[in-house]
Amino acid sequence: MTTRHSNQILTFWVVASLSILCGFSSLTSAASMKMTSDNQLARAKTIRLKEVFSVADNKGVVHPFFDVTVDIHRPDELRIEATPVWGKGDRSQKKSFYLMSKGKQYEYDGITNTYTTGTAPAPGSVASSQLWDMAAVTTVLYPDESIKTEPDMTISSSKGTLNGRKMIVFTDKFHTLVESGKRITPVYRIWVDASTGYPCQKCEYIDINGKDILNLKLDMFDYVLNKPLPKGTFVWKAPAGAKLDNPPTLLNPGSVAPDFTAYKADGAAVHLSDFKVKTVVLDFWATWCGPCQASLPHLEKIYRQVNNQNVVVLAVCVWDTHDAFEKWIVAKNGMYTFNLLFDPAGKSKSSIATALYHVTEIPTQYVIGKDGKILANDVGYEPGAHMLEDTLRKSGVTVSETRSSHS
Image (cartoon, rainbow, N blue to C red; front, side):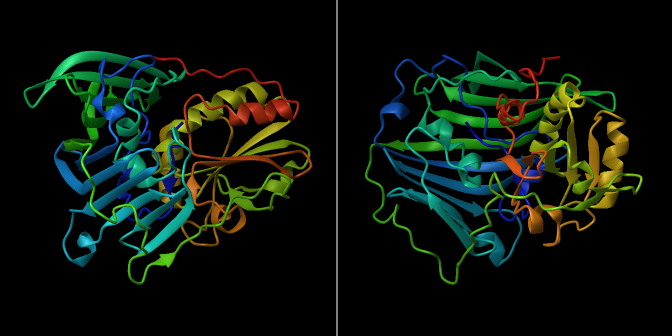
């Protein structure tokens, strides 16, 4: 399962805010579909490929953002390097990279000159890494993996061509949202070479009233299989002057949830302590965060089931501006019936999310019990995941399975 989220500091992953509804990392292959009957990628010991990650502007013009190199040595070594190609000056020349080796993983941000460390994902799993998602590593590592179709997703395949070559085109469509009279559907497509099984292009579109608008594009090419990779490829060495950036961990279950004050659109103050006898779902989101916007309809469906069972939702807009929050409220026009609140601290370190709840990525969700202690926490949004429903059931709340219908 791939977690979808956005970071507070966008750094090299500046395109996170451009992903209007969902993250770019979800599309692999349809349930029980294989890209080819004899996939060379699935059997290769080593793989090297090059990529170009691009962003389309509102006129449809595609702008390259990163040149990417991916090196893989099965079963447990991987390196991704991303060189910014936008802008000018020294900043545009600093590479960012992700490294997985000897049971550890490292991710270096060339713009901030900081890095994080952690335990590498188990074989067959995916990393919680921005570069991993951007480079579509899951699609390359596990080309024949059967993916469970999520309730919010329809998946199909068709024949096509790309640069004169025959392709199999896989298409994912998520549930349709209706906003301001427009029908909006996230659409993902991947073009796979019909003869080799190599993924060649991956795109994210936003379907607005039946018209696909390109948002993000990844071109994948120059595959080299089963050849020696350069010495030192999978050796970790912190770049000169780089500082370790270990963000705080989320508050653990059993911890007392800190009280806070946030504000409704009309200026009314709301305190967590106002709901001492209720189960509270605390959701941190932002107007610019695509995964947050994709998660809110799911949250609304759950709330409509449980709002008469002493359950309250406090959806706090963080790391944002009040003007953006007000415009968003007007645009939604009553779409959501739970409490929509704003944290006036904005992007400062004193924000509710950062200072009190140790949030570094959104959406982040906490479930708080009637005793004021945290029951569970979760980061990101993945259609089909049921952390919230499962936690509410364990606390005695009746909630059914939530499935988003395709419009």
